[in-house]
Every structure is written in C-alpha cells, then in structure tokens.
Length: 550
Image (tube, rainbow, N blue to C red; front, top):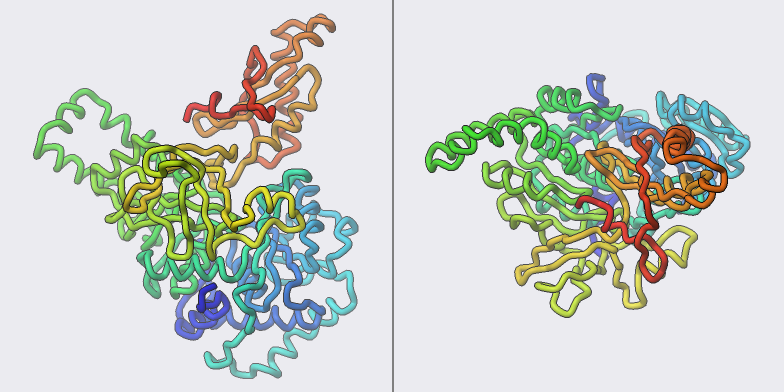
C-alpha cells in the first residue's frame, strides 16, 4: 500500500490551484477549484445530515458533466463509495445496479430519472439532480431535512472559505472508493471494487510519467463511468491542477476535432477506433495511391512527405498536445507502424477496470513498437507460460492496483484472483527481457464500442438465443459495427415449412425486437446466417477467435 492518499491528492490540488479553472462543460462557464471545494463541502453536509456513513454507497447516473465530477469527488472525499453507472443502460438495468450496490442516495440526470420507478429502489433515501443539484425526491425525512439546511450550515461553518479550510477526511487507502459495474444486465452484472489505494497508485504513476502541468487544458470525451476516462481525463488532470473541458454528449468526429481546435489540449486520451478511423478515412486513401507510394519510397522525399502528413495530423488534434495515449483495446498494427514511421507522438497503454485501470504504459518516445509499455511501478506483471519471452500465455499480475474483488460475488472473485494473489486477466501476451508487454490476443470477449463503451456480446446473445428458430448466436464486430451470426434451428424451420428466405425476413423482426431491449451503443446492425454449429471448447463455450477478423 502506498503512502499517498487519493483524498490527499484532491485536497492538495484544490489548495494549490484555488483560483484557476478546474471543470467546465464544453462552451459553458466553468468552476474554479475554490468553487468545487464549496460544492464538495455542501454535499458533505447533506451526506452527514442524511445519515450517510463511511463505506455507504452513492449511485451516480448521468452523462459526462462537471456536476458528475463534483459528485464523484464529494463522495470519495467523504469516505462514502461512489457507484458510477453508465447512463446508456435500460431503466431496469439502472435499477438492478442501484439495488445490487446497496446505494442509499441517487444522483441522476433529470431526463434519466423520468424513466425510473422510485418504488423499485427501496434503499434510496433521496434523489438529487445532476442538472442543477436540486432535490428531485425525498423518501426519508432525514434526507429532506438535511437538504433544506445545507446552505445555512455551510454559511455558518465557512463564512469566508479559505484554502487552509480544505481538509475533507482521513479515509485510508485500504478502504473501498468505487464500485464499477462491467455491465447492467442481471446475470452478467459484476461490480468491480476499486480501493482508494488503487486510484492513488494510478494517479501517482500518471503524475510521475505523463506530461501534464498545472493550468494545462484537457478535453474529456471518454465515458467517465468507465475507469479509463475517469482516471486519466478527470482524476489525474484534476490532481495536477488542469482545466478539464467536458464534452457532455458522445461526440461525433467533427465535434471532437472542433473541440480539439478550440481548446488545444496538452494531453489526449483516446480509444483505438478514433485514431484508426482517421487513418482509414483520411490517410490510407492518400498514401495508397500509386504515385504517392513511389514518392514515399524515395529517400529524402519521403522525409518531407512524412513531415507534412504529421503536421496535418497534429493540427487535427489541436496542434499543442504533448502525447496521445491510446488504450482500451488492441491498436491496428498497420496504423501503428505508419504513425511511428512519420514520428507522430502517440503511445499505447494497457489496462483493465479491475486495476483502476492502468497495468502498463511508457511515453511515446520510449515505448517499443507493438508493445503496450512496461508494467507500472505498483504491479508485478508476468506471463503464465514456460517461456514468457517466446511462448504466448495468459497475462497475470498482482499488486496495489488490483481490485478488492467483485461486490457480493465471491465465486467470480476467486475465479479472477487465485490463492497466491495473482489476477488472471484473460488476455494473452509476451514480455521481452526489458519488460515490454506485448498483447497477442484477447481471450475475453469484450468488444470496445466506437465511443469507448464496453460491449459484452453474451448479453446480446442471451436475448437473441431466446428467439424462435435460433439455436445459438455469436455477436462480433465488423467495420466498427456489431454483427450477429445466427445458427438456425433447421429442424424446426423444416417442421413449420419455413424457407431460408422467410427466416431471413424474420431476422429483421428479431433485430428490431432485440435492439429495443438494449442501449443504443449495443444495437446490432446486421444479422447473418451461420449454416453450422459454432466450434466449441471442451467446456462448451464458443471459440470466438475463429469467427473474428482480428
């Protein structure tokens, strides 16, 4: 366990960066670090009066916003546990997570709350709006009484708030800080328990290794309810004293480029799909032309062309960044080689929700081509193989970043973390003699959506497989879209005299029905007949890697 505390990092940054801008929604007035301290202290009065104790859970459901971030900060600095829930989930899934997590207070966007049934959330004592921090609903008298007295208590205690007043709590690093749910659907939902220590480790490593300074602008566009965006577009920059501009809606490429142009961020976090799209749509058509191929093969000329392409790329990202950090999924090897060849300042990291999330990283000018950096200083990472340098095996690790386990799920925890403390990532790779981690495959089935949201295909398949005339299905990603491969029940089709053409028409109705039950980012765009049973492992799970293009 490290000495630095998560709460200590937050307190120190607020005191040191008192007057500068901290958080703002895109093209809206923002909050200074002082103003955020005021909001945090007021929420602490609310929690205390409502009977919230250290370790109690507070649910947070909303789009990315400055108020989302303030709620997160107020919760963890109080010593309560934040439960950030992806707002794209269906109402029944949001309810399921809030109940499973034992949350006592709910912070939620007004529009999302309209879709929820408060009577199905029996443990919730009160609901607060993320739009303006007004009270939406009060179930317990203590909650309403506490909410109504917040301003009076604050004014009495802090008539003139000063930096030296900022001392939130003494919560220690061994305590639980976050429960991050990997999905919403009952039966698939696992709450990853992330400690204060794990988050402090991620922040300390980032402060020592990633290029940011106080006052630097950052654009936050990845989902904050996921650990990647939360740790590196929000918590780490906040503890440095950066100004974080939050894109409150899932941005189109045009909006993203526009925001980069206006804000000119100093550090950019991205998922591979954003970078690969630029490579595929803007660069590949140009560098694939026969004349350009010839010019790129001529020494001297190719250096000039590479410089021009690099300058255009750099301009696309605002022109002032120190580094682009790519993570969340495997990066296209052709794109990686080309970006390295032209000297573009990017690096590829590796992480998991269960590590809060960082596992390995190195800066753009020290990382090795094809690698995902070296393990962070608080983790021991190795390969479960006879020869980790040459024989691919499962990436396993242990150390301070590792989760405390899955909330109320000892079975899943013991399957993930063995008796010696090694966490089994489910990812396959190699580690060279210098400690560089090379990921060779994803044995886990998670698909990263275009906007950086995790998609668990089993959830979609479980719905599809319940439809008539379907034996089994497999959801894969093709061209950034979800495609369902369906193995039909040929015996039933024959029995009911249904032709293949008729079945294909039926699949259109299946597609519509299934998509209505899922968040938009999990919608399947195409159904394709797979004429035979899928190849299985001895445990009867489908060998997914046989059906993906990766």
